[in-house]
Length: 149
Length: 149
Image 1 (cartoon, rainbow over the protein chains, first blue to last red):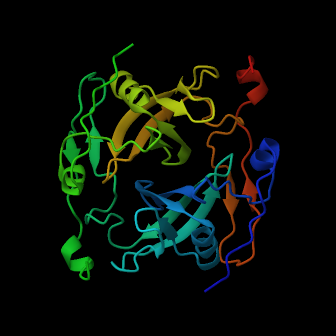
Image 2: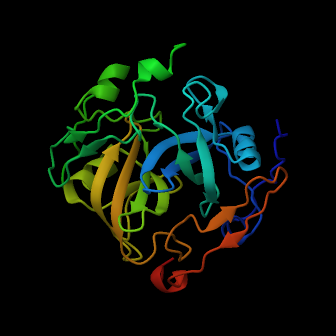
């Protein structure tokens, strides 16, 4: 496995925004937000987090790695399900605290078996509405791909 | 302005994932992560946060509202720059702690004047690389649209 990249510390706002040095602004927990979109459809597949090691491994290997806040553990996407994410392109945002990766997703990105974690839509323009209007079907059976759980 | 929706509290994991009740899982700071993508191109424009009031107003008005962590304030996108976001569709993710809005973005989403906040790409497959490879140009002059700052 590659070593963790020794990212330089974030500089001034101008350095962060206009510089060409990658200096991720990790939060108090050492994380940046990571958004994965489908390289073909543009659909948002999932929102998760990366620590320095997950970001380093993603850059080095071109496969998506994350850090699970609930499990407190580094995590290679698809290590259990086989539904890996090959990274087509990685971008960072203006203040370098969010990562966008365009990926080639095998199977489904969501642990519920859906292609995307965003499988429910919220109706707009209805002040008191607090229900979803639609829900997408599963593309895989989660019981079949997360056998050991 | 619409009242804040009284969102019900999140239930079990199954309720959160398979239910049709919108029960956002706000974090300890009362926030969910919000990702805005361009409804036409699929490009990720920005990653920000919403509190209950920002989420309520976005649902009620169909215009994007956020909560600024740095300013500690509710914020209508474009209130200063005029570069508003009309929401085409809103989705929530499996555990209801992240919101995806597809928007019609007027002008640029980024305060630096770029169309998207994600205007720099990171090279992949190079273990020690910690620099950006490209940077997109501004679409507007930030000095002209944020005059009062």
